[in-house]
Amino acid sequence: MQQALTFFEQRLTLSRQLHYQRGIAYASRGLGEVATAQGRYVEANTWLQEALRIFAELGDRRYLAQIWQDLGRLAYHENHLARAEGSFQNSLAIYHEVDDRHNMADLWLDLSRLALARDDVAVAVEHQEAADRLIQDQADLSLHAASSMNRAWLALRQHQISAARRDLEQALYRFDLLHHRVRLVEGIDLSAAVAMAAQQPVRALHLWSAAERFRRQTGLLSPVWEARQRQQQIDALSLQMTADDFLSIWQAGQEWSLEQAMAEARSA
Image 1 (cartoon, rainbow, N blue to C red):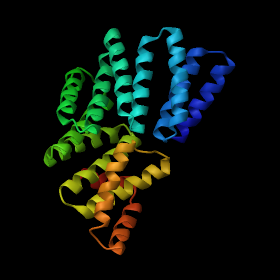
Image 2 (image 1 turned 120 degrees about the vertical axis):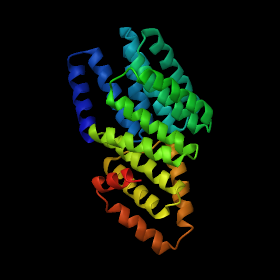
Image 3 (image 1 turned 30 degrees about the vertical axis):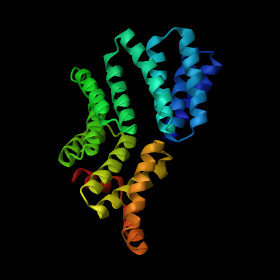
């Protein structure tokens, strides 16, 4: 993540020196995405609004849609769900206008996750199905991986443990091929939640502990509602065992390598 931050900062400096507006917008968008992932939400909004302004001036509709999607993800991270919905709908309207089926599919996955945050599983399933109808024509491995991950979240919410494990294994395999560390850590978190649902508390704590260390190392934060839900489950487990047992299990997970955590997450 630090490498991405340095790259976008350097790109911004050079683009400003050259008075290259499109380059400034690209760099601002990248800085906004990094700030969102690191939980610097006010800064993220400033960067994304700058990108939105420039792309509007340039008349670049496709990038306008992408910035609206980024603003929706920012609002989702902050747990401002109504604002996220509005931003996503702005993005969706433009994607329809420019017939961008690839990014439209990605956006339907965002809308599905938003519906889950609102505990509206039926709508989340509808949005997942809309995404998959578009994804089936796409060769993008990342998009297929994201769809598998979201299906795993949906299956877990519907208490379909076997389906959640199957879809999660597919997602982790694909994101591992892509070396997508952020989504791999999300997958480890999800594997912990699946273990919790399967009444495997020790395994769940090991995985949650490992994921927490990886996030801390990279300075990444989970969306507010996801972090809150995860912490509630961890707190519940801490009340079911002695303090020494809890700390011992948590410390063991802290010592796992990413490879060890991945192997455990995929062996569910």
